Image (cartoon, rainbow, N blue to C red):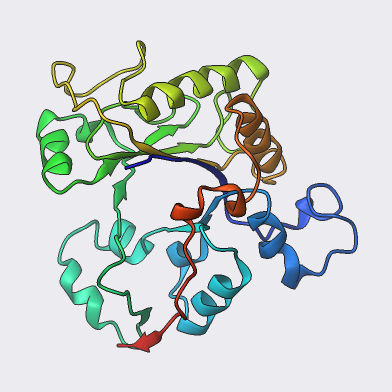
Length: 258
């Protein structure tokens, strides 16, 4: 089965992008469609901060082309308030809404940690057991960055290499990430980089790679760094450039409330 590299950004609705990344005069309602014509995937930030209604997901679905992929961030109620404990009760939160998912559609999961206590081989073993990717997160040294392969795909979040959320990426830094991405995509691993379970060797098979830029508080550098990395990797813009087998016609979205 073919494997693909998807480069994108975290969120798409930022005032500083208007007239810089987005063409001057572009209506705000057209910003997602424009971004989806440039990138092949985008992280949804809103799902982290609050519950999103089914009509929101349905609208985003209609505004993006065949083959486009959203990465939905888990709600902070589970990650920051419950701290991953007693998560079953989150299913019954009053007013909760969600989308039904067709059984044939595959859902992948990834975990980003931000504390040294997670640097345990048992975590790598657990993630591998449940085919969950360990997020490779660059945070200007603020939190650990581990390169363990725990699933059949890689998930990268680039928050800035010199100053978290603020610094842009130099040509040298982007070339370094392009080299790493090529290695993971080909089924290998980068020669450098810290691993929690250093002795563990993952299966050598091609992997999908998802990479999202979340750098600068103003978010201004993110789309341009993402496009530069795409050029380094010789990737075309837009989901329509994907292999047609990877971009089948979508069935209608069917929202449901629980």
